Image (cartoon, rainbow, N blue to C red; front, side):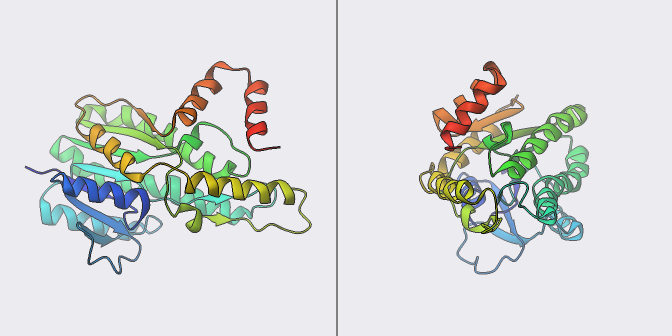
Length: 267
Protein backbone atom coordinates (compact mmCIF):
# COMPACT_ATOMS: atom_id res chain seq x y z
CA UNK A 1 0.00 0.00 0.00
CA UNK A 2 1.41 3.38 -1.03
CA UNK A 3 2.40 5.69 1.79
CA UNK A 4 0.38 8.89 2.19
CA UNK A 5 2.64 11.94 2.27
CA UNK A 6 1.93 15.58 3.11
CA UNK A 7 4.43 18.13 1.75
CA UNK A 8 3.98 21.72 2.90
CA UNK A 9 5.21 24.55 0.70
CA UNK A 10 5.01 22.40 -2.44
CA UNK A 11 4.11 24.98 -5.06
CA UNK A 12 7.74 25.62 -6.06
CA UNK A 13 11.39 24.97 -5.29
CA UNK A 14 12.49 22.16 -3.00
CA UNK A 15 8.94 21.35 -1.89
CA UNK A 16 7.68 20.88 -5.44
CA UNK A 17 10.71 18.75 -6.32
CA UNK A 18 10.15 16.51 -3.29
CA UNK A 19 6.43 16.12 -3.94
CA UNK A 20 6.92 15.41 -7.65
CA UNK A 21 9.68 12.85 -7.04
CA UNK A 22 7.74 10.99 -4.35
CA UNK A 23 4.65 10.90 -6.58
CA UNK A 24 6.77 9.39 -9.36
CA UNK A 25 7.96 6.76 -6.88
CA UNK A 26 4.38 5.70 -6.22
CA UNK A 27 3.52 7.60 -3.06
CA UNK A 28 0.13 9.24 -2.55
CA UNK A 29 1.26 12.85 -2.26
CA UNK A 30 -0.64 15.91 -1.09
CA UNK A 31 1.19 19.19 -1.56
CA UNK A 32 0.17 22.48 0.00
CA UNK A 33 0.43 26.21 -0.54
CA UNK A 34 -1.45 29.18 0.83
CA UNK A 35 -3.25 29.71 -2.49
CA UNK A 36 -3.01 26.61 -4.69
CA UNK A 37 -3.80 28.28 -8.01
CA UNK A 38 -2.42 27.36 -11.43
CA UNK A 39 -1.52 23.91 -10.18
CA UNK A 40 -3.71 21.85 -12.49
CA UNK A 41 -0.61 20.58 -14.31
CA UNK A 42 1.03 19.30 -11.10
CA UNK A 43 1.37 15.52 -10.96
CA UNK A 44 0.25 15.46 -7.31
CA UNK A 45 -2.81 16.92 -5.58
CA UNK A 46 -2.47 20.43 -4.16
CA UNK A 47 -4.55 21.64 -1.22
CA UNK A 48 -4.73 24.92 0.69
CA UNK A 49 -2.72 25.29 3.90
CA UNK A 50 -1.26 28.38 5.53
CA UNK A 51 1.14 27.52 8.36
CA UNK A 52 0.22 30.84 10.03
CA UNK A 53 -3.45 29.83 10.27
CA UNK A 54 -4.07 26.80 12.46
CA UNK A 55 -7.59 26.31 11.14
CA UNK A 56 -6.25 25.77 7.59
CA UNK A 57 -3.70 23.26 8.89
CA UNK A 58 -6.37 21.30 10.73
CA UNK A 59 -8.70 21.40 7.72
CA UNK A 60 -6.01 20.13 5.36
CA UNK A 61 -4.93 17.30 7.65
CA UNK A 62 -8.56 16.27 8.28
CA UNK A 63 -9.19 16.23 4.51
CA UNK A 64 -6.28 13.87 3.89
CA UNK A 65 -7.22 11.53 6.75
CA UNK A 66 -10.86 11.39 5.62
CA UNK A 67 -9.85 10.64 2.05
CA UNK A 68 -7.02 8.17 2.70
CA UNK A 69 -7.69 6.89 6.21
CA UNK A 70 -4.14 7.57 7.36
CA UNK A 71 -1.15 9.90 7.08
CA UNK A 72 2.26 8.25 6.98
CA UNK A 73 4.77 11.02 6.30
CA UNK A 74 4.92 14.77 6.85
CA UNK A 75 7.55 16.78 4.98
CA UNK A 76 7.56 20.06 6.93
CA UNK A 77 9.02 22.26 4.19
CA UNK A 78 7.06 25.53 4.14
CA UNK A 79 9.18 28.48 5.16
CA UNK A 80 10.47 31.91 4.30
CA UNK A 81 13.84 33.60 4.10
CA UNK A 82 14.99 36.88 5.59
CA UNK A 83 18.13 38.95 5.17
CA UNK A 84 19.45 42.09 6.74
CA UNK A 85 21.62 43.55 9.48
CA UNK A 86 19.97 42.70 12.78
CA UNK A 87 20.08 46.34 13.88
CA UNK A 88 18.29 47.49 10.71
CA UNK A 89 15.72 44.69 10.42
CA UNK A 90 12.22 45.54 11.72
CA UNK A 91 11.40 43.43 14.75
CA UNK A 92 7.94 42.65 13.35
CA UNK A 93 9.63 41.02 10.34
CA UNK A 94 11.79 38.99 12.72
CA UNK A 95 8.67 37.75 14.49
CA UNK A 96 7.04 36.92 11.14
CA UNK A 97 9.88 34.64 10.06
CA UNK A 98 9.90 32.86 13.44
CA UNK A 99 6.11 32.41 13.19
CA UNK A 100 6.51 30.79 9.77
CA UNK A 101 9.71 28.77 10.07
CA UNK A 102 9.40 27.64 13.69
CA UNK A 103 5.89 27.98 15.10
CA UNK A 104 4.23 27.19 11.77
CA UNK A 105 6.23 23.97 11.51
CA UNK A 106 5.34 23.10 15.11
CA UNK A 107 1.62 23.65 14.45
CA UNK A 108 1.71 21.28 11.46
CA UNK A 109 3.44 18.64 13.60
CA UNK A 110 0.81 19.06 16.31
CA UNK A 111 -1.92 18.53 13.71
CA UNK A 112 -0.55 15.24 12.33
CA UNK A 113 0.70 13.61 15.54
CA UNK A 114 -2.71 12.41 16.85
CA UNK A 115 -3.30 10.41 13.65
CA UNK A 116 0.24 9.01 13.64
CA UNK A 117 -0.17 7.98 17.28
CA UNK A 118 -3.47 6.30 16.46
CA UNK A 119 -1.97 4.28 13.62
CA UNK A 120 1.18 3.58 15.68
CA UNK A 121 3.59 4.71 12.99
CA UNK A 122 4.64 7.79 11.09
CA UNK A 123 7.57 9.93 10.06
CA UNK A 124 8.07 13.69 10.19
CA UNK A 125 10.92 15.32 8.25
CA UNK A 126 11.55 18.93 9.20
CA UNK A 127 13.36 20.79 6.43
CA UNK A 128 15.83 23.05 8.21
CA UNK A 129 19.07 24.45 6.74
CA UNK A 130 22.82 24.10 7.00
CA UNK A 131 22.63 27.81 7.87
CA UNK A 132 20.88 26.71 11.06
CA UNK A 133 24.14 25.30 12.39
CA UNK A 134 25.90 28.67 12.47
CA UNK A 135 25.17 32.37 12.84
CA UNK A 136 25.79 33.99 9.45
CA UNK A 137 26.19 37.73 8.85
CA UNK A 138 23.05 39.36 7.46
CA UNK A 139 21.22 36.01 7.72
CA UNK A 140 21.17 35.78 11.51
CA UNK A 141 17.40 35.60 11.86
CA UNK A 142 17.05 32.89 9.23
CA UNK A 143 19.84 30.89 10.86
CA UNK A 144 18.14 31.33 14.24
CA UNK A 145 14.76 30.01 13.05
CA UNK A 146 16.28 26.94 11.44
CA UNK A 147 18.60 26.29 14.38
CA UNK A 148 15.61 26.50 16.72
CA UNK A 149 13.69 23.98 14.61
CA UNK A 150 16.69 21.63 14.71
CA UNK A 151 16.59 21.66 18.52
CA UNK A 152 12.81 21.31 18.70
CA UNK A 153 13.10 18.28 16.44
CA UNK A 154 15.65 16.69 18.77
CA UNK A 155 13.24 17.16 21.67
CA UNK A 156 10.04 15.99 20.01
CA UNK A 157 11.75 12.98 18.45
CA UNK A 158 12.36 11.65 21.97
CA UNK A 159 8.83 12.49 23.12
CA UNK A 160 7.09 10.52 20.34
CA UNK A 161 9.53 7.64 19.83
CA UNK A 162 7.48 5.26 22.00
CA UNK A 163 4.47 5.77 19.68
CA UNK A 164 6.35 4.42 16.66
CA UNK A 165 6.91 7.89 15.21
CA UNK A 166 10.27 9.10 13.88
CA UNK A 167 11.02 12.83 13.68
CA UNK A 168 14.15 13.93 11.83
CA UNK A 169 15.83 17.05 10.46
CA UNK A 170 17.01 17.30 6.89
CA UNK A 171 19.16 20.40 6.33
CA UNK A 172 19.79 21.61 2.77
CA UNK A 173 22.59 23.88 1.71
CA UNK A 174 22.26 26.18 -1.30
CA UNK A 175 19.88 24.92 -3.98
CA UNK A 176 18.92 26.55 -7.25
CA UNK A 177 15.41 27.74 -6.34
CA UNK A 178 13.43 30.98 -6.25
CA UNK A 179 13.91 31.42 -2.50
CA UNK A 180 15.88 34.63 -3.04
CA UNK A 181 12.89 36.23 -4.74
CA UNK A 182 10.52 35.19 -1.96
CA UNK A 183 12.57 36.15 1.09
CA UNK A 184 12.18 39.37 3.04
CA UNK A 185 15.05 41.72 2.30
CA UNK A 186 15.66 44.48 4.80
CA UNK A 187 16.09 47.61 2.66
CA UNK A 188 19.56 49.04 2.17
CA UNK A 189 19.10 52.26 4.09
CA UNK A 190 21.23 55.16 2.91
CA UNK A 191 22.10 56.16 6.47
CA UNK A 192 22.87 52.59 7.57
CA UNK A 193 26.27 51.81 9.06
CA UNK A 194 26.07 48.46 7.23
CA UNK A 195 25.12 49.79 3.78
CA UNK A 196 28.18 48.76 1.76
CA UNK A 197 28.80 45.40 3.42
CA UNK A 198 25.12 44.45 3.28
CA UNK A 199 24.79 45.38 -0.40
CA UNK A 200 27.84 43.27 -1.29
CA UNK A 201 26.57 40.33 0.72
CA UNK A 202 23.11 40.42 -0.88
CA UNK A 203 24.79 39.86 -4.23
CA UNK A 204 26.92 37.09 -2.74
CA UNK A 205 23.90 35.31 -1.18
CA UNK A 206 21.96 35.44 -4.45
CA UNK A 207 24.92 34.03 -6.38
CA UNK A 208 25.11 31.13 -3.91
CA UNK A 209 21.46 30.27 -4.59
CA UNK A 210 21.75 30.70 -8.34
CA UNK A 211 24.78 28.42 -8.40
CA UNK A 212 23.29 25.91 -5.99
CA UNK A 213 22.55 22.22 -6.41
CA UNK A 214 19.62 20.77 -8.32
CA UNK A 215 16.58 20.42 -5.97
CA UNK A 216 16.19 16.88 -7.31
CA UNK A 217 19.13 15.91 -5.08
CA UNK A 218 17.15 17.02 -2.05
CA UNK A 219 14.15 15.00 -3.22
CA UNK A 220 16.30 11.88 -3.58
CA UNK A 221 17.69 12.40 -0.08
CA UNK A 222 14.18 12.68 1.37
CA UNK A 223 13.17 9.47 -0.43
CA UNK A 224 16.16 7.66 1.08
CA UNK A 225 15.30 8.86 4.60
CA UNK A 226 11.67 7.80 4.25
CA UNK A 227 12.86 4.32 3.33
CA UNK A 228 15.31 4.03 6.24
CA UNK A 229 14.01 1.73 8.98
CA UNK A 230 16.03 3.36 11.76
CA UNK A 231 16.69 6.93 10.61
CA UNK A 232 19.18 9.30 12.17
CA UNK A 233 18.09 12.56 13.79
CA UNK A 234 20.10 14.87 11.51
CA UNK A 235 20.76 14.77 7.77
CA UNK A 236 22.65 17.35 5.69
CA UNK A 237 22.29 17.73 1.93
CA UNK A 238 24.69 20.09 0.21
CA UNK A 239 28.14 20.62 -1.22
CA UNK A 240 31.25 19.33 0.49
CA UNK A 241 32.34 22.72 1.87
CA UNK A 242 28.84 23.47 3.19
CA UNK A 243 28.78 20.26 5.19
CA UNK A 244 32.45 20.56 6.15
CA UNK A 245 31.75 24.01 7.61
CA UNK A 246 29.66 22.32 10.32
CA UNK A 247 32.59 20.05 11.19
CA UNK A 248 34.94 23.03 11.33
CA UNK A 249 32.68 24.83 13.76
CA UNK A 250 32.81 21.85 16.10
CA UNK A 251 36.59 21.53 16.11
CA UNK A 252 37.96 25.06 15.67
CA UNK A 253 38.21 27.75 18.36
CA UNK A 254 35.33 30.23 18.13
CA UNK A 255 37.44 33.19 17.06
CA UNK A 256 39.21 31.21 14.35
CA UNK A 257 35.93 29.95 12.92
CA UNK A 258 34.48 33.45 13.03
CA UNK A 259 37.48 34.80 11.16
CA UNK A 260 36.97 32.21 8.42
CA UNK A 261 33.34 33.27 8.04
CA UNK A 262 34.23 36.96 8.02
CA UNK A 263 36.86 36.38 5.34
CA UNK A 264 34.34 34.47 3.26
CA UNK A 265 31.80 37.29 3.53
CA UNK A 266 34.53 39.94 3.08
CA UNK A 267 33.89 41.63 6.42
